[in-house]
Length: 178
Image (cartoon, rainbow, N blue to C red; front, side):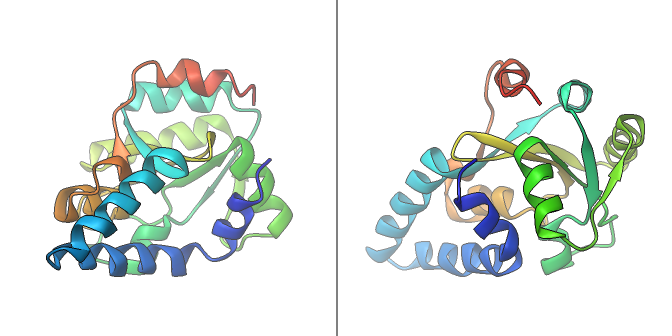
């Protein structure tokens, strides 16, 4: 397991604020191109997300050894709307790290409960994503476009690799054998 994920997990609220602050620099001529290049490189090679369907999310939950439910960091930090906050499902590396850290607000749930949360979010118009850090998938999240940091980075600041679509994502997820 890579050391970056525990560091991110410990300070994720600060990272989310930093990502948005840094993204605003993309609006400054010349400097913006450099910031966007760095952010895209980071998203492509270090820490980014992928859009997934409800069906893909449910299959990922099914193959995970255990799942925990907690608050979506983006929604907790930015509160841009009144949709539910308890929508982040940590899996695999994320589940291990968050339990070792004693991450507040997360609790182990059954796979069926996790899938029901995803279905409710889907019904309320939220989008689904899976996050990865240096190749390790660690969280499934349901968020809205007004709070989701990766979506805002892409849509508002041109950081295309903050969140993308990936073919065969469930197969890649399954290879990590959780």
